[in-house]
Image (cartoon, rainbow, N blue to C red; front, top):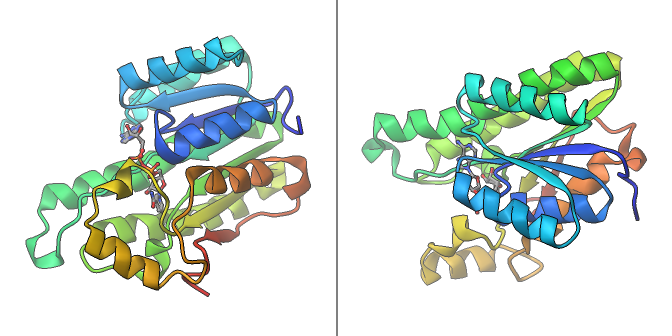
Length: 247
Ligand code: NAI
């Protein structure tokens, strides 16, 4: 159960949703948590809740689309914790609109957080992992990056980018025994999806063979597996957690 004892896991977007579920699963697996989120108040609150439940963690307010902020946060973490073994690139946003109506800033913002944010965190953290000659990186992509979705051209492009990025990083970092994989979730019950209309949700449900939406923990469980020693020979792969939506 404590497969990740003595490991340090950095999780982005950890204040809620899938990131928060990852934090819980990694803590239960024995890892020390380094949590970041753009929402400083929420991530502090989350950290306090973990501390109160007996799980030690470091939490910092960071906008992952800023390389400077990521560098500063990782420097602080390394000063305190000496290493980072696991990076879960989870933070992501949507700014949905049909292509003809999509504003330039909606395109830029989604690409800046979802894709450049993954580049920033991976670049900075992998520098430490290369020295350690070990590490596991898991990117939370999306099935939308593989199949596309009307109204989500920006999001789909960012998530397809995350998958291509993971495969390239996997090839570059393999020689140092660092694995890089991606998880492509389908429809997960979080704040990101709760605002969708009942009509959209019902249409989605019809396309899910398992007939239900997923809990964030069902993504977190796979992230823990991919970061653990049982997955040490797995790299450059994309795993769908989508109830069979895409086969
Ligand atoms: P969420 O909206 O519930 O949580 C995202 C977290 O990321 C929030 O705490 C937010 O403050 C943080 N965040 C946003 N921008 C940030 C930035 N610039 N820097 C640092 N933190 C930032 O979202 P959810 O649903 O938990 O999604 C997590 C990841 O899973 C995202 O990458 C999303 O694209 C992906 N995903 C979600 C699916 C779903 O059905 N919920 C399906 C497929 C993928």
